[in-house]
Length: 579
Image (cartoon, rainbow, N blue to C red; front, side, top):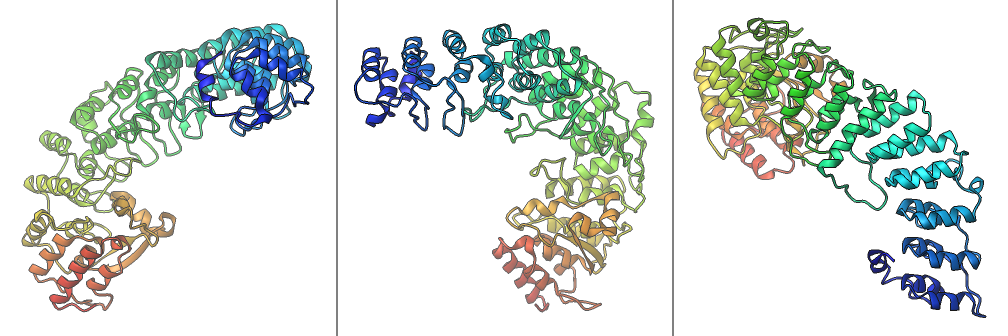
């Protein structure tokens, strides 16, 4: 008897109607026989909601003797337990729990034609699928040898479940004993390239080093059997999926070694190298992202291109300038592509944006310093809509799809100061009318330091117009409880796309707003103070519209920050602005 199972059952079977269950749990065969042969009628198939029938309990306790007694008394080997989490018959449960002697006895007791291929539409409840999912290799081999009537559906389901659970040796067995269509092999490969599927009794799977080795072997087996390594899942091409979760590095390696295209792209034309230019998750449930240098090196070793363009003309090198660090950026830059380094550094995307635009937008000071030292990119190079690196440095941005990887205000200011020290024009205005002062006002700032106020003052002293009006973008349904939501503002050449179809981006255009309006709405307290100190008009101005104080009071971004709203409104009203 399994002591752990016995321990789990200790507090069950207290009612007289479950005396059969209790005697089996306790290993009391004498009591079991007495109950079965007593004059009092007992229901040999009575169900406990958690543990099932007495025969289920006998299987779980690995008691062949109890199984014999129950079968002799008419127990139903095909009665499915009423437990919603794992409804199985005793014979399927024996395959699931890995009790070969009991499984053989039950198999002999019930003709396979009655149960082996399972209830229609429920192949998971069959003994072959259970043995495959739980990795019981010898049992799976026995089942395939005992009977040749297995349907293709059950074989397919067995292969898929073995792949979902990284049961490499069960997959090897199934591939040697049965034939599978390419579609099924591709489905199995998709499952094998993901993390393990959780079984009903699991809250989180455990992974050891050998598991990741098994995953690599499993992928290799499936590709050798005919699966397409360039197939896609719902999350895109398998290579990209494996690259974007660090703990799937073994899967990425196996796919590449078995012929997967390292330059395969998603619907936006982006390759795995595009995606790895940003920090990625270590595991599907691990929320601390890191740069996946191992994945990058694997891809580069298999001739992935760092200058392949996506649908916007952005290359992995552009995004490495934005989202990585100098070491990773230089790894992309020196990856042995056909372009020489000078040409690569001077690359522009389809909208005229350079590597310096991207590095500035990402606030990557080390990459910016390297690029500026090369003397190849003009510090005031303009994109198709008039954005220079200085504007890119100041606008809020976010790295990839990780919500908390946003450029912080101090990073934006340091990047802007670096560009100004190299002669960047502080009076530049984009095609949308945005100035550096407007973009600085997009950053939430409680005024805990005077860094933003000082930098805003510096821009004004350099000639920035405190009354320059420009449209800004708002999200009508923004959730204030996640304040960084507004940091997802588009930047650079994406901004005209939003202005041309704001509803497609769930945004609204508010026209003719001065920097003071921008700062009031976004909670940029330091910028508000600097603007007022340098004579900005706190009234609605001309043309007439909402006052900056009203904009602050009605800002959905600041709903959960009433103290900050109150402070900004008091400053504005105190300076002569109405509400």
